[in-house]
Every structure is written in C-alpha cells, then in structure tokens.
Image (cartoon, rainbow, N blue to C red):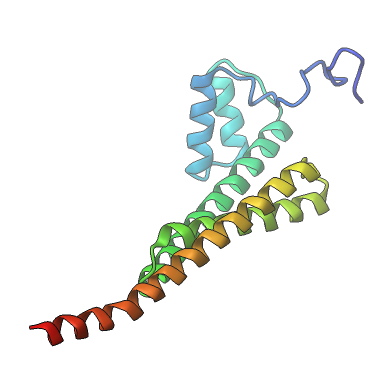
Length: 165
C-alpha cells in the first residue's frame, strides 16, 4: 500500500526496485548474469557477494522484466531487418518502409499494453503517433509517385535523344 510520503509499506521509493537501487557496478554484474542465463539464486548470491541486499522475489521480478525487454528488443531488431530486406528486394529505399513499420508496430504494442494495464499512454500520445504515421505514409506515396513519373519519362527522353542524333 502507498503511503503519503511517496513510499510503499516497505519504505522503498515508488517506481524503483531494490535491484534498480543497487550501485551501478553491482547492477551491471546482475544484468550480465541475467544475460548469461543465471538462476535467481545465483543472481541473489552475486548481489550479496558484492555487498548488496535483495530478496529472491525482487531479483525474480527484475530478471523477468529484463528478459522480457531483451526478447522484445530482439524481436524488434528481427522485424526491422526483415522490413529492410523486403524494401531492398523491391528496389525501394528501406528508410521510409522501416520507419512506417516501426511506428505501426509501436502503435500496436502500445494499444496491447493499454489492454493489460501496463500502458501509460495518453490519447494525445496516440494522436501524435497516428499523425506521424500518416505523414510518413503520405511522404512514401509521394516518393513512389515521383519514381513512377520518372520511370515513364525516361523512355520518352531516350526516344527524343535517338531522333535528334
């Protein structure tokens, strides 16, 4: 339960776990251990060896959040790479496509997080996100139209040059 002082009943500041409040060097060792697949007990022991103190449950929650973030980051990198390859195969500039797809994915994830109670996104942020998507799509369409117009003009230019030679 939250008290008036901005602290919960354990006395820790709101929003920061006991693992997050550890010294940076210990937290870096914890993050490395999580990345290496260490167990909760191994990580808890590591913290204690370095002079810190955390409960198993705090370590477990921190490790779960860290692994979830890592999975989402890896998935995003894979998606961005696949979008880039798809754009290059189609002969398009990958920058616009990747930006559009990244923003679309962000929008979907944001809406999904709102449904779980994890999201803290306001209607204003969603509105700005949708406006950014629309602007990118319009720019991408203009770029595509300009490319088509240039492709149509190229054969006509060649005919004029041949006729004049």
